[in-house]
Image (tube, rainbow, N blue to C red; front, side, top):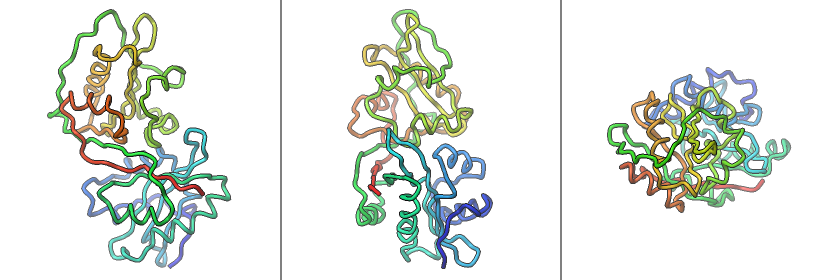
Length: 283
């Protein structure tokens, strides 16, 4: 068994390992979806590592590399172990092997998200020195169950595509900072995959949404605090649903402590599917 970088591993080999490692998972990714996911999350094969049994990948961790709110960070964008190789601590060995390479590359912290009900993984991460930084909800409603009632917006407005990078006011709309996979950096890695819409009143941006139609992913949605409860969020959400090409939608990583987004989704008949921890380890 040898642990080494994925720098010289072909995508086909990596995809085969992904398929085998996640064969018993509810959600499967095809090749195109995996390419998109890895690109969006900043996958760097040079700083990603796998355990090889001969020429076969039997366990792997794909690391995203980037700046996360001012900190040079690595992000676990996919860790898996083939069924016959589980229970040997390979994921832990791969992580420990990677630390010196990440430090050498100037990475200050390592970030991951883990399902709260996966208590075994949470325990392993705690032993490795990870600390919980935030709690997230995730939602996966079927399109047919969503309440699409709309409140009429009081006053003239316009709805139009926007470039989110051109509006410095946007972070002021947030009740919490978007997670790694929902950040501006993630969106800007594959901008062609997203629909970005803004609502304007008197030429002022008062709300916006970012949506990925091919996956049904509601990436960002926020309204200026002074313009809430006026139907702007509902309008943006409705437009997202109209351009959705997937059978369901997903809203991943809303902060549990953010009552406003939870209440908004509940008003649309969308209840949390589960919870995740965001965990960080300083390197």
